[in-house]
Image (cartoon, rainbow, N blue to C red; front, side, top):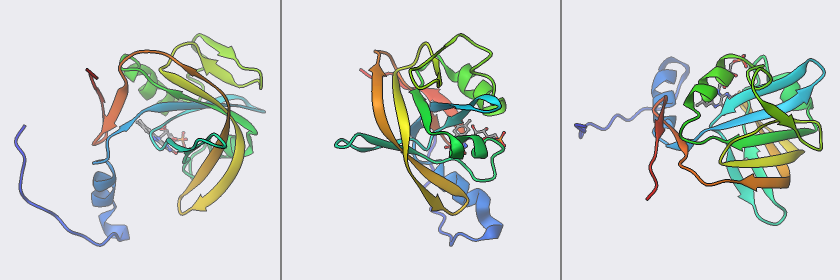
Length: 169
Ligand SMILES: Cc1cc2nc3c(=O)[nH]c(=O)nc-3n(C[C@H](O)[C@H](O)[C@H](O)COP(=O)(O)O)c2cc1C
């Protein structure tokens, strides 16, 4: 890959949203699928805004967009589950990004709180909503981790709007 020395500097404004999106996209992340039960059935969403937050108490966060059609379901959900995807789950990530019901259409279980959960992922955090903080066009949802699962495998990564695999030696 050739790299350019050119540095672009800008002040974020409504006209250069693409640049800000690209700058945010320079931060490589993992990919998660968040699920919750809702009165209209299961809702799922692909999210790369996940972060661990606190060990004691055990807290994590993710950020749904307030303009997302799925936002009301997640805002109202007392419980939700966050699944960290493995390298071979890119198709699932895109399917859930397109379709809020994609998890229900596949093999899944239901956890003790009634939340639909994937059978396979690198890690799963079953959460109770702990706090919600307004943050511009997103909301920061903080979850208290009630239980977690962990498996071995390579992670699915997200960088520059594309998913990639990362081999960890
Ligand atoms: C890799 C990836 C990461 C994403 N991360 C988030 C996120 O953190 N928060 C969010 O609200 N949407 C995120 N999205 C978008 C949603 O998964 C979904 O495509 C969007 O909510 C669809 O719009 P709708 O909810 O109005 O149907 C992400 C999509 C992809 C592919």
